[in-house]
Length: 556
Image (tube, rainbow, N blue to C red; front, side, top):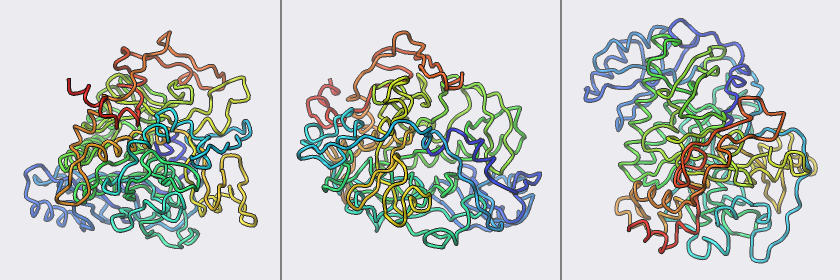
């Protein structure tokens, strides 16, 4: 999940925006307005206009509009209309550019451990295949799923993330430039000065990634077998950039639901969602710690996202999300001190419970994925829960092997593509020599790769397997071309062919690392071998998912 663990750090890093009493920021603001079900769109538009708003984008498919206004009372005013459910803050705009210090989080967490491993060339495999323990775990290898199914250009995978670097040599062949879109605009307040970016623009094209997160995700799913570096799970799949995340890692409601409805209307088969929708880590409909406006905003986020997921699934899109990096039992969350993480300094302590939802992870119809380390143990950071975990997949765990040279080794994480432009800007690639300045980055041929960990890295493994399922069992998509397969069928095969994995013994697992905070040092697994809170229905398996004998057993 996108740099999700310390959302408080994100809030602390943002500078100088002052919130008004209505919850908007000084200056012009953007809201997502949700129409009431069954209400006239014309009446909702009139209500927006009368409240001082201007529609900049309308998503008629799910009754949602993105609105710009400089009226400080817009949100409360528009909510009075019988045609409008309410308005949620989308983002503040119109502020002077200022640099934002980007905090580290669990996905980039590194404490200077063991040196990186040297890749060993494996005959017939990609040059960095020996470092891809994750692919071996789920049998996405030359002797595994590659022999039967490698995906298809007729299967379109949407990566809803910070973007995809289409120029990367281990992505370029499978990148779909025609279908890719960017649903965001860089905000200097949170993303930094646009003039300092490689393209010197706040309006990025749909073939760049100025963070690196989305590129990592995309190559895990679909890096081609081209002798360049790594191999993806579905190396012949079609990769579509559906950018909804800011460079800084924020994911607001408007771009997210727009990306989902676009996917539904353009024949996307599977989408990867490695994020939560800001500004609430947990969305509570009626939490007494929140103001009435905040409660209404959270209800709107839940409602609008559910509408978008329902619309996507009804149009053939399988929706898969990262479970989260808070080391929390989502079946029994107790506290949230990180929300709202936007605008800055607005977070407050809240008691939360199981009625509060991490969105889109806990949205109905979404397949949620927990993260595993190389030993198959639940990663120390991964969220879990008997009701919430659907499947498990490799996500990396730098804290495996405590007390041994393997502890904190880069290769405990997941290796995938890294944009050169991001590396140069971050100082992890030497501009003079082109060599990495850290063992967290690997250069192979004319491409760069980075080691990351997180449920963000686990979700694309499940997405890649889902793409193989569509390629293997899908039928002709008469409307959009390519292939299609009902999301309920994809989910049934994905979960039904996952490898059943029991809870550890004892069920209260202790992570042997005294540097972990107490709340992360232990985790209790509930359930049995067939389904439990750590592994859900099991560890995804690419080879079993495309094996006809395995699927036939599901029909008995």
